[in-house]
Length: 187
Image (cartoon, rainbow, N blue to C red; front, top):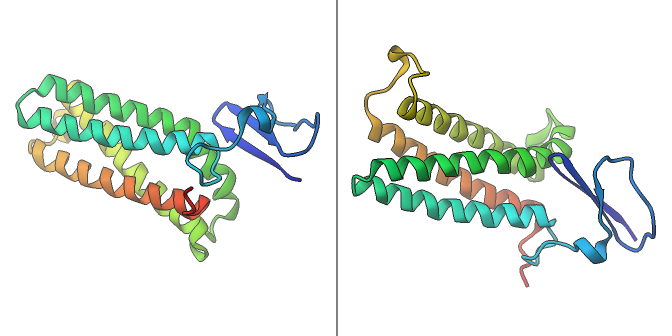
């Protein structure tokens, strides 16, 4: 009989297994196990982690579609697609990834590289921050006058290619983190 506490940004969900009417000091929503259940991918991961994994794959497909739009010279549609993915990823970071990292990895800092359980998400976080910041910078340069002229880049293709490669590395490191944390026993 154990209880699990899952934090997803502003929402805190306590899933009780066999414990009746017990509440946590966490502010937010309390959901009994028979209502919330575990995730839907069969790994024992919380629902938020499973939803995040699926959303990340959907975003990867959208990024490929956006790249295809740019190749066909549909630059406005390309910009809308890529920026939408960038902003959706910020939401996923704020509501799922950062709370998980704060609760499960930061408690072990600075010794996170001693165990793969902590090292995988730490590597993923560093690469993810770099990819997200580069994406935000590219969006600001491409769509606004906010960035001073001397900080703007001229070779768009090079930086966008760097970004897409970095994004794919982050996606794969995120999948690796998921499987390190929740195992590979898919049903």
